[in-house]
Length: 310
Image (cartoon, rainbow, N blue to C red; front, side, top):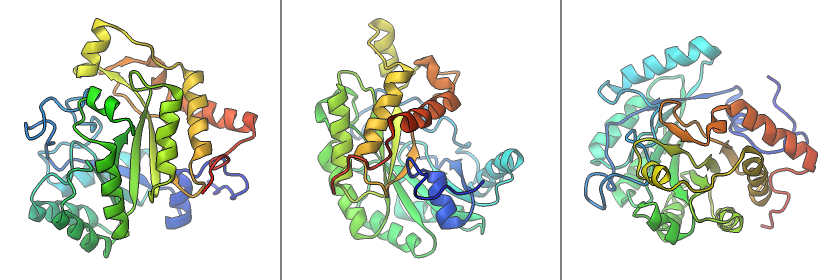
């Protein structure tokens, strides 16, 4: 597929970035390092974040019981059969993927980076799980291939974070971002739109905050109500309003306008497992959501960075 010119781009997608950087479309291979999370094992809390499933936000990741090499081979086979893709991002997604001794992390990450077809390593983790020795390891790995750190911010509003039982703060997130930036390690920030009690302005304030930080990418995630989560139980007991498709798409465009034009947009919506998803059910039609966002961007005559003031 032809890469759109800068003039044609309404937002700088991950696909655009991969075409620019690697010369072709690149797919993530979701892996599991078999780790837990300090918000699950009792260190900070149990049960995890209120919105997080038993899979630790990695419901589509590989079987942690398998060696990384086997996980990669199986994931690659599935993707190649559907797409013909020959370059991949090794993505450690489930739970907190820097929550282990450094020697174990080095072995896992090195194995994932070893195949020639792996062009980058992406690691999902928490802002409070990046001690100095882990940061040193990331620098070591970065000298071999690109390493990205995916950090869950969700919102800058600490009251909401407490309500969601995350045991994190925006201050911890900011500190982690700057520590990674000092080591030239790109950060991809995760944001959840539609958290209970948050207004449109509160959500936009989160994006405004991110626009001032030295991050390289953003994942905008629709709030999913999943079975087996604390939030799912609360919703079942006392349903609260969720965004409709049109409202969500307009909000995403508002967010894009506030972000710097060179930040990579890794996600505009999300994939809730069909077997676990309670609401909103319209999110299952991901193609419709993305098409609606693209259509409304053109109708509004706007693009990423339109309201950004650096």
